[in-house]
Every structure is written in C-alpha cells, then in structure tokens.
Amino acid sequence: MKRLLVFLFLISQATAVQAQCNDSCGCGPNCHCGTAESHCGCSCCGPRQLAPLQKNFGVEVSRISKEEHLSYNGHPINQRPLPAVPDDSAKLHLTIIGTEAERRAVLHDLEAAPELAEFRDRFLIQDYPPDHWAVTLCGFYTAGHPTIYLQMPGGKVLHRQDDYNGPQPLADALRRAAADYQAGKDPDLRMPSFDWHGIPTAGWILLAGFGISLLFKKGSSS
Image (tube, rainbow, N blue to C red; front, side, top):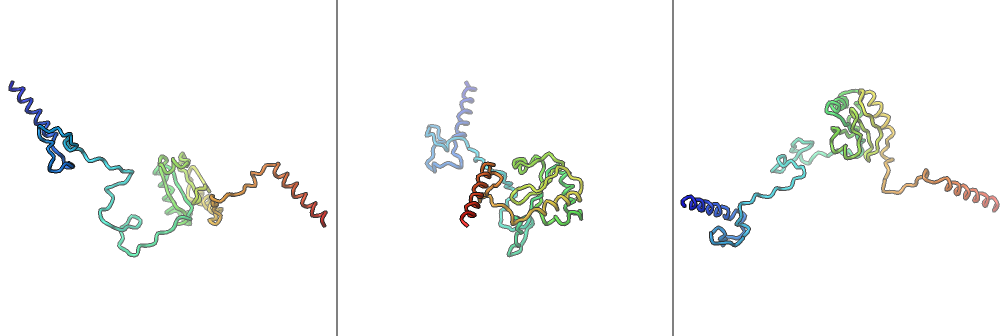
C-alpha cells in the first residue's frame, strides 16, 4: 500500500510540473492551468516548447557584423567617400575548371608568367572545382584537366581547351580569340533578326523571278 501511495504521489508531481505555464503564456495572471482541478486546455499549460528554427538559405550568420562597418574587397576601410567600384561588366570571362592543383597552376601563370602579362587586368577570371554548382548547372564541360573557357560577357564561347600545356600556348589562343571580340557588336537578343540562311530554295527562285520581271518591266517602259 505504501508503494502504491508513493507511486501516485510521483505521478501527481510530474503532472504538476508539465502543467506549469511557460514564458510564452498568453493567459496573463488569470491563468490557473497549474491547479489540480483545472482542465482549461489552455495552450500555455503544456510542456515548455522549444523556439522554432529560423530558416537559413546559406547565410553564415556568425559572419554578420552586429555593428555598421565598411569594407572594400573584404578589407575594412574608414575612407569617405568610398572608392569607386570598377566596372567589369564589359570584360571577357576566363573560367578555369579543374582540381585545386590544376587551377593553381594556371592562376599562378596568369599572375607571374610574362607571356600572360597582357591579360591580367583584361579578363574577369574565376576558377571552380568540377563539381561546383556554378559550372555543373550551367552546361560547362568539366572533365578537362583543366578545362579553360574564354567567353563574351553574354556567355558566347570564344575559346575552350581541356588541358593546359603552359603559358605561351594559352597566351596565343587567348590573343587570337580576344582579337575577334568587339564589344560594339554584341547582339541584342531582344531584337528580332532576319536570317537569310533560313530562306528555302523556292523562296530564292521566287525572289529572282520577281527581280527579273521588274527589270523587264523597266526596260519595256523606257
């Protein structure tokens, strides 16, 4: 009998603990959910609830400054007004895709090799491992060792190579590819263009016949 009483006492104590209003209780001072005779069903009478997890879409919260600060290229600055941000929207894109060692070899030559000196400030240079989403989801070929792309700002490929055999061959290829690019000739794809190559043979025959008839008409009238 004594054991049964102890067991019932423990159960009542556990129920009382679970029935305590938590910090988010909205019932105010009139909440009596914790009393033994109360069965109000108030939401604040349940066990303490954990705060819901906040959604995070890739933001490193720990790196967000708690105070206002200014930085330029990742370096804190106190200068005002801020230095002008260079406009690289018209630069050609040089993309290197490969292992870390393969990418490092090309990047080192772009920084130090005299054969590639003319391209150091001429291109927008980026490098990625083969499994990076920026290249796998955008249709890039990623199986080279490494793969090197030179593209127009709009994405048109001017040159691609799937290996690297030194700075001089790369410089020669980049020089030839870049020479063919003229920013003033970038197409505006919003404007419809007329494709002469799409006219069928029958269309050319009709156009030729119409032109000949005009010539004969003009000759007879004179």
